[in-house]
Image (cartoon, rainbow, N blue to C red; front, side, top):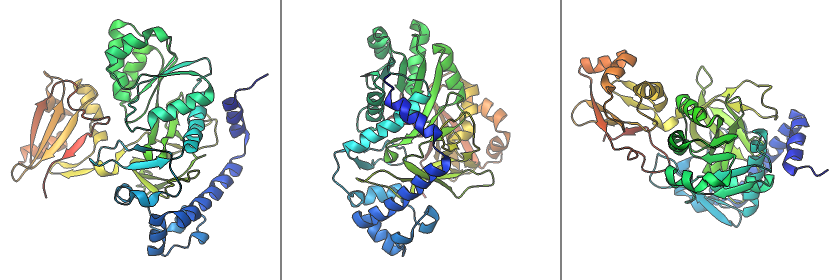
Length: 417
């Protein structure tokens, strides 16, 4: 009897005592801190600046208030490299025009494939499945990670890349695929095509790269009659940080390869997710600030691996903006735009053409009464206009024009202070 190696490793992980895995995690954390202190010019300099003795560091708290930031990675990129790289990818974030380069070895790519394979196995993906990917391959890590995971599982995989959904439908329809993978907005648009032409018989849709409203998830699942599962990752962490289970109750974290913290939590436990990579040697990261707001969830028997979960992302640390109508963030407006029927692509910009803030609602669908619904949903904020504190405006764009890249920045602050 030939057992699939992914099935074997998954079974082993499920059976190992949690304290045993936590011991391995702690040991790998200590080794990573000492390794970067010996091999990375950036960490060597920073540890000296913060008066950190790497030999005495046993847990993240021993590093005090030292963190690695995206700005560090942009400004001192080459100083992070500890060993010869075989490949590199770039970040796809929305907060800076300058991407961050992240270097890896091909061995690290293969190891990341194992982590993804275990996540896919837990979702029911098997060697007999046929997986098609619509991830953008331009400097983006998601496609290569998925390919490595499919290679480990031994399942059929084709890479269509991020072509127009209508063309994708026509070219892929005869392959008999059972799993469709892409970014959330793209899968929503593919579902609109499938709703008209007929959905295929698939068992799973998997997305990563951005957040998704629950209304959009329900729509996709209604079209395909299959689960639509989200994964969460960053290029800096080589893709998958976590993945939902079939119950869609938060992301099960990849704690086999990362040490996670949540810093500066509020009264409800929401704070910024921070991680240290545990098995990387080309460009390890220590206490890297993800910029994402979330919180740890209580243990669940539905997660069969000995890992923690985080809640679906609440937003970005850098997307909280103070305006004349109060602090705003993208997550506050998801339900509002759902009720409008504005679709998945929308944006809010803040300008200051005179002495007042002007809040502009950008949508891609004409004929919807944005301001009337806004006053109903946000009476307190709407009252600031009546008080003469802010101005409101609406701008309608052609479909597909708001999104200039892979991700759409929901809140734009165009004010010059």
